[in-house]
Length: 96
Image 1: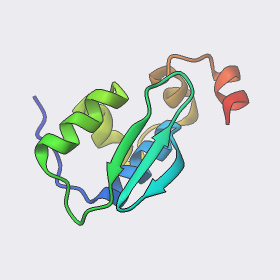
Image 2 (image 1 turned 45 degrees about the vertical axis):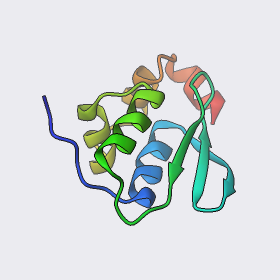
Image 3 (image 1 turned 90 degrees about the vertical axis):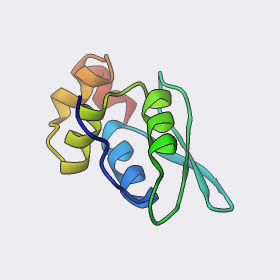
């Protein structure tokens, strides 16, 4: 099992943006991210996210730690992102 990375709220938000999530609203220090076909994810904009909070975010977004690490490093191409989102590449481009 891959270890959870130590990330800030902003880094987590940018990784989830690569997956297709977009900022819906901000209330206080929390940002709500939404993505078509997935559950909305609240992300606190803290300097460092705790292990439990990050695990809950990944569970809600329905991605593994390995997938999250790849998103952090920017390894996914558009076709791979479409596969992670369980969409055909054509639907992926349409949903943007």
